[in-house]
Length: 137
Image (cartoon, rainbow, N blue to C red; front, side):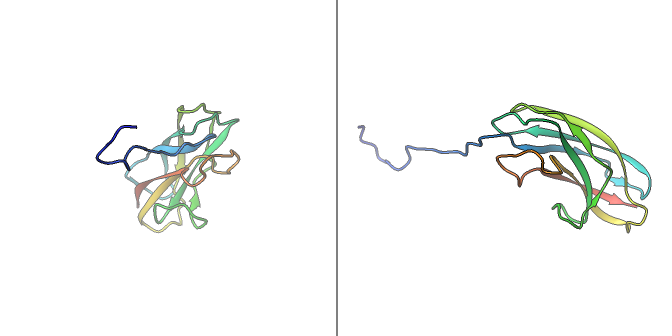
């Protein structure tokens, strides 16, 4: 109803995620670790979605040669239990893990993955992981 110099810029959109969406928003680990020696790894798992995550899930840790989780990555321990999370709520936890003694020294990544066994139906399933660089001795 009002004459404007630019009529094509009157609308804006953004994604609306319906349902829970678990993701790891922080990974804390040492910058280096020795093979076979225990180290502490912590993460913050957050429900960034628009609905409650129902039931307990598990955040697991992996050793990877790159920052992308895939089937070749080595699981580090059994992970940690994360309680049901309301939208916008986080849960922080810490675990002791060991780099397997047979791993070659070099540059790796510790990857934390929320809902590692994929039991929670989420609005997005491709944003559950976060990586942190790790030098293995």
